[in-house]
Amino acid sequence: MPWLLLARNLTARPLRSALTVGSLLIAVFLVLFLRSVVVALGSGVEAASQSRLIVQSAVSLFVNLPLSYQQKIERVEGVGPMTKLQWFGGYYQDPSNFFAQFAVDEERLLDAYPEIELVEGSYEQFLAVKNGCLIGTDLATKFGWRVGDTVPLIGALYSRQDGSTWDFQVTGIYRSKAANLDSRTLWFHFEYLEDTLESGAASGPEGVGVWILRLERGADATRVMSAIDGLFINGPQRVQTTTESEFQKQFVTMLGSVPTLLTSIGGGVLFAILLAVLNTMLMAARERTRSLGILKALGFGDGTAFALLLGESLLLCLIGGLLGLALYGLAAPGFSAFLTSAGFPPLVLDGESVLIGVVLALLVGLVAGIAPAIRAARLEVIDALAAEV
Image (tube, rainbow, N blue to C red; front, top):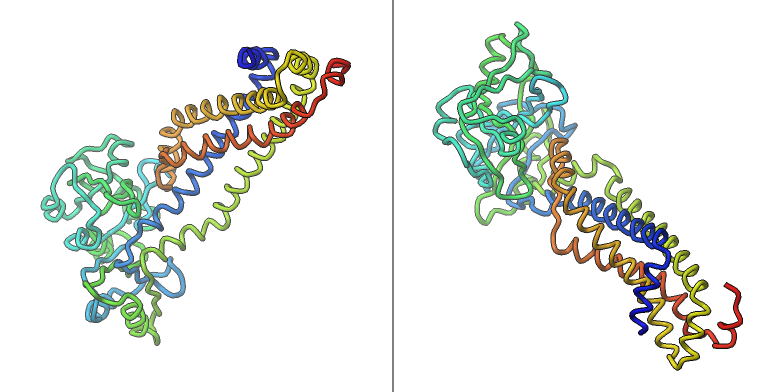
């Protein structure tokens, strides 16, 4: 009988119950979404290799370094395969079609980034074609590019003198096997960029943005970084060498306190919904005063009254939480595609997120329902029957 009464109570005020469920749905959806963004921002840092170093200008990431530095860096004990990395900064057809493009030492790219796995085309073809490029699977999907296609990019940082596009031939499509490297980048020959600049066919900054290098087995990263920085302590350009993990953190730091802000927003939303559910349960407890008195007069104990109010709160919140999880599961692929197009790592709905969503919903139900449930348990039969509702 008490459980039948619980079911009846849930449907006694259908609009109020629907609004309560809807508020939990939105709260859980927003909390999961914001959490996923925060986790995505940190995923590249967590997956970054400690055996890979980044050499950049000590002044700014946007200051190029002389090409001659490479030979000196390669002679440092402990330095393994390394490659140049120069930001190209072009776009496809329209500035809104922006994605990362890097000029690299084509023969050393896979040594520096073994995470790259070709799924179409061949690396040999990439090496053989001077204007060849490798593109990630996300780019191939977004723009419909295939091996053999020509990708015309408008150079914003490096512009051709005749105003024409830079034409790259897709010689391979890759996917990344690790979170620290995305699948939405275009890689092409540094030599192609260098020769075009030297011939006067294009203009743009000379030099190298950063070098990516892998440590030899057993090499001490701190010692190697110190040795590289010491080589150029007197210029002409001082350098700053960091691990890939620290380099990734710099980009997260560039976003300021965005992760903290997102976490705060999620906490604020959850607290507001908690107050709303608490108000709902207090009204429900007041409305059920007479019926609870009748139950107690029939012989049901205080525990039954307590369980009815707390169960109603938990059930409402659990339904809302599960619906919020379902909505997030449906919407996550679309949000993930949008964020990856803007340069963020993809969102992932994992088991931990599901557990967090369910626990949060039940926690809200528990906190919101505990006070009305205690009040119901302490209610005296005479007071309940005499109460005006």
